[in-house]
Length: 263
Ligand SMILES: Cc1cc2nc3c(=O)[nH]c(=O)nc-3n(C[C@H](O)[C@H](O)[C@H](O)COP(=O)(O)OP(=O)(O)OC[C@H]3O[C@@H](n4cnc5c(N)ncnc54)[C@H](O)[C@@H]3O)c2cc1C
Image (cartoon, rainbow, N blue to C red; front, side):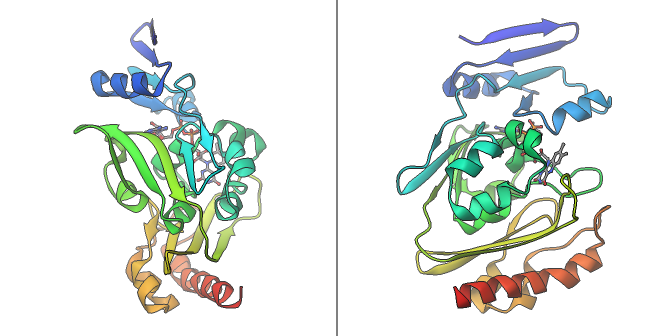
């Protein structure tokens, strides 16, 4: 049975099962979903966010991770730290660069997928490996529950969906990754490229370059690294200019293609 706590003008909804979380999200109307809160809490502390109603997922049971079989299933509330210990190499390589140990023990996969860009940097690093792995996102919201490719979920209006679970088939083929970041424990990515051979084809995901991660479909077909600029429109932020990202991204893609060639 969920708890409902009202304090002054704010109300917190605390579901105790995934079904209850989905039901409350559907009924609540305008509600701010809380995962680990590593993005939301600083916003509230700085006075930039004043949520009237929050859906707190920490007791929702959405933190399950099933990684033993051919299909890996990651509950939205799985923390980045748990992901590092429990999933495959490609996802782990990106997860272990997010924030520091304290952030990784609190930040969730659902929050990473739904993270909007920060004031000075892009976020949502896990989008690149999840796209490369051919992950699917199960979410609920208007129209009910649906499962869709992660790149479609990211390109949609994430604010109106509650992420329940992410799943992917464990990769049987080669994988490759390149990350470009500032040298600091709290650094965000300047550009991320992840690639995987899935079902006989190549899948490439790009994150850290634009407001949400994208699939590099043109490069997947042509194997020409310069084509990545047709797939993603780089943005400027405090970490890097769009021009710099446009210069570096094809080089990173070329390195990933070379890794796959020689692996
Ligand atoms: C010092 C520091 C360093 C960081 N470094 C990185 C980094 O290197 N790379 C990176 O990608 N991020 C980084 N972050 C940002 C952040 O920690 C991660 O993106 C994290 O995964 C967000 O998850 P969360 O659960 O804390 O999100 P929250 O703060 O709980 O939520 C973030 C957004 O997602 C929404 N949301 C959360 N869960 C769900 C859900 N299940 N369904 C629908 N919407 C949901 C929230 O409403 C909110 O809009 C950093 C943050 C800090 C403070």
